[in-house]
Length: 309
Image (cartoon, rainbow, N blue to C red; front, side, top):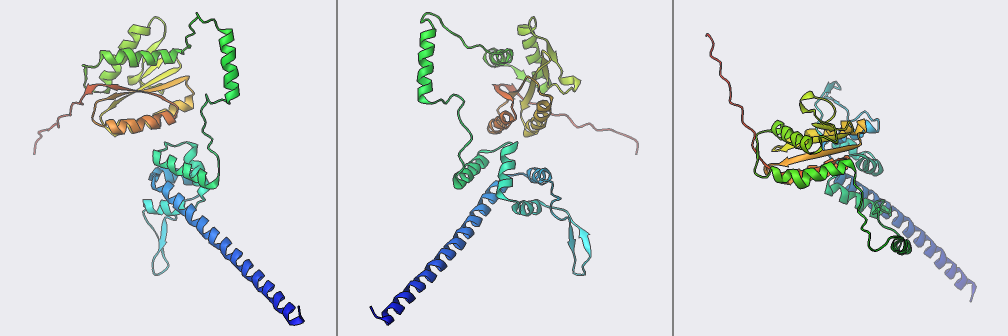
């Protein structure tokens, strides 16, 4: 190979190196753009399912001041304005995806949509799911356990699982009490409360302390049992009373009661919403019983006063 051939070959290698480097650089830039766009889509998916209060809570949780409540006119003067949902949405879009995801996982009533977004984020980032079944064990461990149980337990002995006091009470409400009210009509939540309290006192009064605390306005739910179990009752004919249950459960959780349950009387008016609230209550650590019942609140008649003109 002559000198000129060597020069041409070297030139080709240099050119190829430049092209390869440029291609790698362009790919890196392209990948980074795609990554940012995907993060933006995930943030939109999360924030779309957050309420205004959720976004305010996110801002407070991370110690930010939030969107600027002032705007400038054409003369440079600042005027206070009313902040809208879009202002909080735009501010939260400026937060990192990791911050939004961590807040969503921390302590809020996750809808199925938010759960799906979080699962997609974990799959995209390659993070394994932390959710696992408490009963899942390696096959070898399960086999050994089965062998141990079989060898230690005589075949003619029936072993029944032990249930707690609280579970016993809840089982009685679901399996016995619901049958007694199937054809009963409740005019309001007070009537439902009195009826359930009477049932529990009749069945468990000789074993447990049953307090009907609804009208006492104490932080112990509607029925307080043995000084440690809370029953909160909900007469489900509107979402307002179910919303109130969310804040009540937060207070009960702070008190660290041994057991908290929400007993919902489903009057048939908002059954689909009841199932959603059941999930939200359970995410706050409460047991939830849904009882089928009948009821319709009596509407208050308007009062008219006749006075002197």
